[in-house]
Length: 316
Image (tube, rainbow, N blue to C red; front, side, top):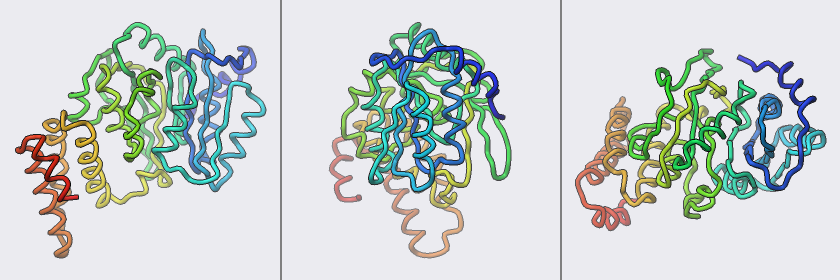
């Protein structure tokens, strides 16, 4: 499961890195309490073989473990790495916002601090795809999903073995992108997003749907990274009973933010989640919660956008 770090160190030593102020690519490394994993993430960036310069921007959200000290140690040894610490906790959305704003490359590749890349050609392959497909707003690739407890491994997407161009409507019908660490964005499109998006809870599926409004999504079929699911993860920490209502809440917020342009697709996905709300209604509060979401789903699927905007003011 681990990348070949003998190969990575070899390329770190023989390929000169520069501190160019206009790199072709930025790598945005997002960290929070990732001391166990961040060195592996950094090594997987530093092993990249490219014919262009790239920078690394590490944004740490006031970790209370040794994540920042590890980042600082790497920063002292690698001129292309800039570390942006924080004195207070920004939260995931604001941390991403300041990270994207600090990037200077034409393209921005994201890597979360508990994931890592397994191919030294990852950045080169993704850059080449975006160069060939200038109409795409971003692109993503296949991943290995590694669940630590219980331990299991799977490839995602499982059966997509050819390049594809996908639409925002297809993404609204269900997430087929395996996390932020698989995506490479055009910086100009990220910069053009409405600033209100950073007031929402940033989660990869719905954030990528916002980006995809600006252009199609490119898919690269190579397996280039590992997504690590572990008990310390922000989403992994949530019990299943909390994940469904939380996801429904996020869908509702993004549906409104997107002007209800994807209500039909999001509604179809909501219906696949609705059964999760009906498991063992143990008391009257749960039954009321179930009825509440059923009513919102019914409203979202039948009423015009103008009426929904008015009703939303009373059901929040």
